[in-house]
Length: 243
Image 1: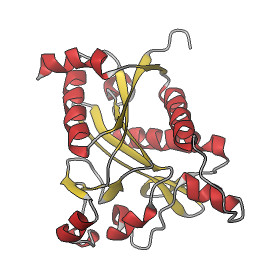
Image 2 (image 1 turned 180 degrees about the horizontal axis):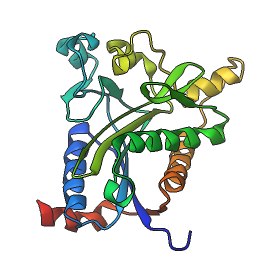
Image 3 (image 1 turned 45 degrees about the vertical axis):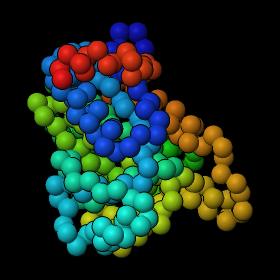
Image 4 (image 1 turned 60 degrees about the vertical axis):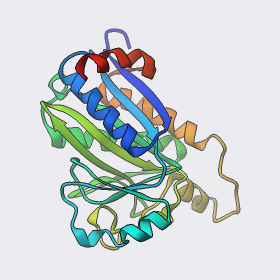
């Protein structure tokens, strides 16, 4: 990929939603200020949390705060687009901090690009995923596999996507996912198990890592960037300058 610009890939591992939200806001501010010279793909896994976006209707959260607390689920209202969704263990969450002035200043184009990243990212596992007209995210077998909700300021994006890999899908019963009544949420694991004719197979111990690697590769392909791993320590000085 000679001559192609880099995209920094930062894997934060398991982090609380509050910590990751604060971090991506600071990183977006640093990207706007050009303290960070490259786009950054932040990957993370969260403890159970429900987030509501700018389009969320109150009736789409079906559980009370008391019930959420009893199940160990946090609740956050954030600035991203979209409706209510869930993040939790077994899910690959990606927060692309992308400067669209270096790509195309069009949020609809950007959303389609993120969808394409995920469509290509699950393809190596034999999953044929695609779009549904008028709805953001990706589907397979008429089930929703990933949700997307973004925000941008001065054409720099944050928030992003949540791809269900080995996610406990029962958490989605606490809401009307993405404000879509009757939607059937699925995961990479569920689809692979059903493809195996319901055989009682143990989840692959490397499935999460394999999907993560595939999504990183597809992100580089779709956004025409060379993925380069980075660390929190390497990025921290740029954040301190903008704090």
